[in-house]
Every structure is written in C-alpha cells, then in structure tokens.
Image 1 (spheres, protein in one colour):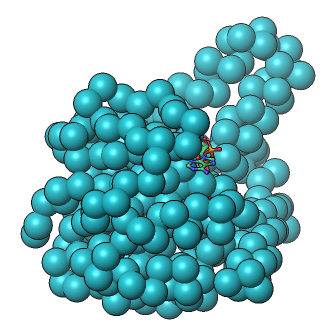
Image 2 (image 1 turned 180 degrees about the horizontal axis):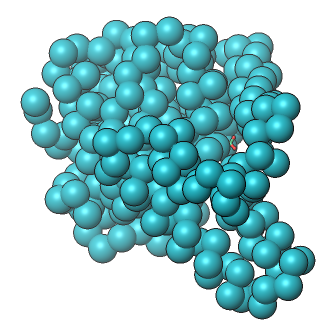
Length: 269
Ligand SMILES: NC(=O)C1=CN([C@@H]2O[C@H](COP(=O)(O)OP(=O)(O)OC[C@H]3O[C@@H](n4cnc5c(N)ncnc54)[C@H](O)[C@@H]3O)[C@@H](O)[C@H]2O)C=CC1
Ligand SMILES: O=C(O)[C@@H]1CCC=N1
C-alpha cells in the first residue's frame, strides 16, 4: 500500500470537511491536503489553502462541490490532473462516465460515497472505480478505511442505492431520533429529556449492534419479553410490514433522485 503524498480538494464543505477531520485524526499529515477555493476558506491548521488553480500535479483530487456545480470547477481542476492522478468524487448521482468525460487524462476515477460519521472514523464508504492501478486501488481503500470501512462495488447500477442507504442514511436516522423524541413529548415527557433519552438510546443500541454476535433481528427479540411492553411496540412497526415498506419507499425516492441527477450531468457532459 502506498501512502498518499498530496491531495487537492475542490469544494471544501460539510462532507469533505468531515473527511479531512477523519483523515487528520487517523494520522495523515495536514500538509498532504491543499484546498482550492476562489474566495478563500477556513481550513484546519497545516492544510494549504489556494485561491488560484494550482499547476502542480496531485496523487488525488477530491471533488466535493454540489453535483450541479461540477462543470463550474472541472475545467480549472483538470489542470491539476495528470495520468498518475486519481479523481475521487463524493458527488451524489454523478456517474463514472460523467467524471471520465471531464477528466479524460486521469489514470483512475472513483465514486467515493462517505457520510458525515467520517469525522469519527465510523462511516461505511461506498466505492466504485474505473481505470485504477493496483497502487491507486490500495491507496483509495486505505483512505476509506481511515474513515470507517471500504465497500467496493462492481456494479454501478447499485451505487445510487448504496448512496441512499449509507450516504443519506444518517439523515433518515436523525429523523427517526427526532420522531422518537417528538412522540415521547406528545405522550407527556419533558421535551429536553425526551431528546436526550432518544439520542443516548440510539447511540447505545447502534454500538451494541455493531459489536454483537447477534443480528439486529435477534437483538430485537432479546429486548422483547413475550407478552411484554417491547413486543406491543414492535407489533405496531411490524403490522403489514409498515416500517420495512416505509423505508423501502424512502430508499427508492432517494435512489431515484440520484438517477435524475446522473441524467442531468450526462446531458451536460
Ligand atoms: N452532506 C452529506 O452528508 C453528504 C454529501 N455528499 C456530497 O458532497 C457534496 C457536497 O455536499 P456538502 O458538503 O453537503 O455541501 P457544502 O455546500 O457544505 O459544500 C460544498 C462546498 O463547495 C464550495 N465551493 C462552492 N463553489 C466552489 C468553487 N467554485 N470552487 C471551490 N469550492 C467551491 C463551497 O464553499 C462549499 O464549502 C455534494 O456533491 C453531495 O452530493 C455525499 C455524501 C454525504
Ligand atoms: O443529499 C444528497 O444528495 C447527498 C447524498 C448523500 C447525502 N447527501
């Protein structure tokens, strides 16, 4: 495995900021990172900020702008891409072919789908690439594992679904936490206390599920005493597959938006 020597980041925002936080915590030196922003930007200590397009070549460039801004930055960014560079994109819905059309000279192009838990080294990172050398694939795997895990896909048609589950997923979980707190408040708990209980309960339950030898289904069974309180609640979630159906609709809607964004980028490219 080859350590990354330099990475240019274009679009240093919520997502790529969390990634850099995770990489710095994992021991990558801040000098590895260069952030480009035409109007300047706060960056962590030791990270280089440039307001003009750099002319040197980078091992990796990380694209972190909003998907509809791809063509605002692609021509300038192309100057920092050589035939030894891997282009990493966190842009939802933007396909490998759309990236390749903008960066034909890059050696490899990768869709790298993290989530905000990167900052804690706890994100499942969806990956799919094209044109990668073995060295680049090893480097990208290492970068992903420093942020949590590396989940390589072979079939790009599934990537938007991975994005919906693992990239958008924290948004859905936060809604669930909020809903638990709202429900508790509606039924009579103090609002602040209901919020604290909901967050700490989900944190502990997720940590236990991650460590346990048992599946989440079995863990739910272990919480529910026959004829007891939990079972009565689970009966509501399970009736007519209510929760599974709701989450299927949720993932489908998110996934299908990815396909729409992909089509928009394809038309422009
Ligand atoms: N927020 C999330 O949880 C996730 C976001 N993503 C992807 O990450 C990308 C960025 O999303 P966020 O970080 O949420 O948005 P954001 O708005 O926080 O970040 C975008 C950044 O791009 C910068 N920017 C705008 N114009 C620029 C230019 N011309 N040159 C250089 N930088 C420029 C902005 O200053 C901003 O900081 C999107 O493509 C999204 O699909 C992917 C997975 C999860
Ligand atoms: O909402 C979005 O489009 C991106 C994809 C995953 C999380 N945020």
